[in-house]
Image (cartoon, rainbow, N blue to C red; front, top):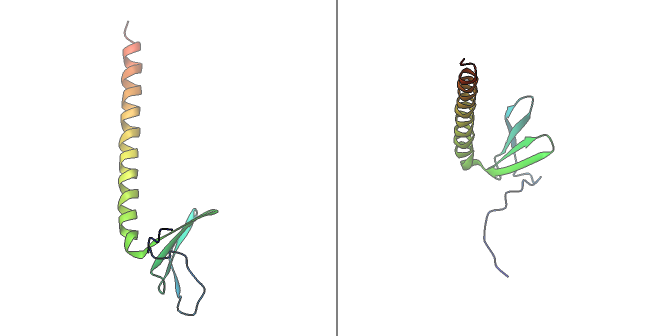
Length: 90
């Protein structure tokens, strides 16, 4: 059987764990466990645990996706407007 030697990203309830609320809004929250160095992102019933050092990388990934989604939506709106203008030519 293969042993990957990956760190266990599960937070435990030992005395060494100290949880800190980093952020909270209407869709979820992020809690950081100092003892485990794990950030836990909770959105509704979904819980994602990542290494604390990866939190910045996740931020960059989400920011990039949000920017690209905005650009995509702008392009879609422009295309719809141009298409509508082309069909209104007499």
